[in-house]
Amino acid sequence: MSTSGAVTIWERGRLDARVGPRQVLFGRMYEDPSIELGAFRPGSRVLCIASAGCTAMKLAPHHEVVAIDINPVQLAYAERRFEGDRGVRGRAERIMDFMRFFGPLAGWWPSRVRAFVELDDPAQQMHYWERELNTWRFRAAVDGLFSITALRAVYAPRFLDFLPNRLGSVMRGRMERCFARHPNRSNPYARSLLLGELSSEPPPSQANEIQLVHADAASFLESQPAASFDGFTLSNILDGTDDAYRQRLFSAVKRAATPDAMTVLRSFGNADADSPANRAEDDRSMLWGSVLVRPAHELGLER
Image 1 (cartoon, rainbow, N blue to C red):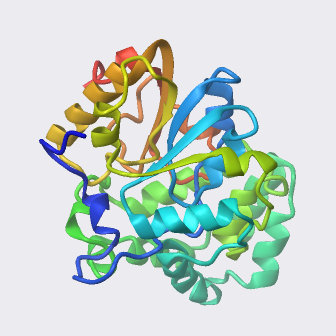
Image 2 (spheres, rainbow, N blue to C red):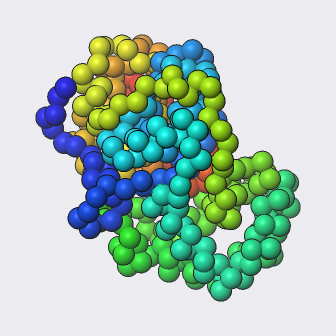
């Protein structure tokens, strides 16, 4: 296994800049697997980032899944979920819990938010949003919570460098994009983001067939036979990394990809937001600036 070249900041297993043990960063994944299910040919062999295991479990009934994570604590957590553990709130969930705690100060009373989540017509949702939730106090609170000064208290600098300017306004725009397109009632990500309610859906029987790998994605793919994967869903692995790692990962993916292999790559940033490959508006989790769905052989051609 090659260990040369750049590596990823995710190896630290922490979102902050402190020195300490690795953590469960994500108790759930905020990535809509319908994107992957539509992109990958049924029955194909797929590499995915393990994270909290949600995407791997959704893919497992339809694909041969290899789930990889560089954080051994996160990987062990995914394995427990594959075995039926209901899971915990990771570091990301605890940060969002803190933000929601101040919701009533912005007029976001739980009953009002729950009524919004129960709506199932996007037109009604946008009317309710503008009338009840998108208040000046809410906008001011989001701008403050998503300011660089506030984010530096909980995130390492490398996780902030790629974020767009005026992030509060950007995130509100992404939320509105989702509410205007997807019914809230059938959207589990609206419930988790707005109410903090995490899905307890049991794993499929095929979850015990998922192959778990503790490794860096680029290093692992460099060690695999050529043309051995039909699909790659890489989460937002490139957020917080440098161009050297990006190029290393793309080269490793292309080498390990079959001729018609597809890739799904997310980012909180806006660098590829205007790409024709961007499916962010179709991802019901509403958080992403880009969700790029491209053939593996096209990786790197848009930059």
